Image (cartoon, rainbow, N blue to C red; front, top):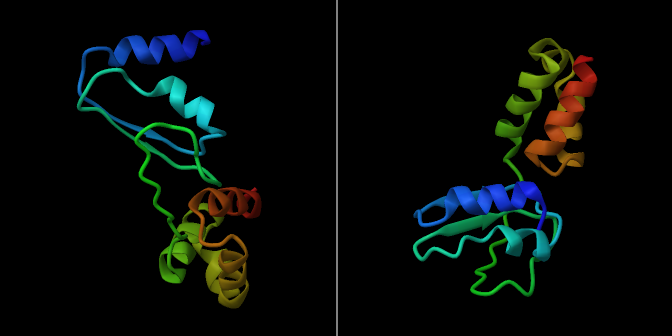
Amino acid sequence: EDELTEAVRAALAGRRCLLLLDDAADPAQVHELIPDTPGCLVVAVSEGPLTGIPDVRPCTLGGLGTTAAVALLARYAGRTRVTVDPQAAQTLVEECGGRPAALLVAGGWLAG
C-alpha cells in the first residue's frame, strides 16, 4: 500500500463512513481502500465491472438525460456556445454518452 492509501485507511479506522470512489481503475485499487470497520459503505464508479471484491452489488448507471447533459455542457463551455448551435451541443452530448466527466472535458476544451 502506498502512503495515501494508508492515510485514508487510518483516517477511516473505527468509523462508520460512506466512501465514494469515482473512476476506479481496477478492483485492486478499490479493495485496498475498503475500510475494515463494519457499517461502512463503499460506492465505486468505474468504466467496467469490478470483479473479485467481496460483497459487491453491481449496478449499471447510464449517463445524464439530454436536457441535464446540455445544461452541464453549457455550464462548462458557456451558455452562448450552446444556444448558438443547440443541435451541435446535443450531438456532442450524445457522443459523450451523457457522462458528466466527458462533458466537463469537452466543455472546458470549448471554453478554452
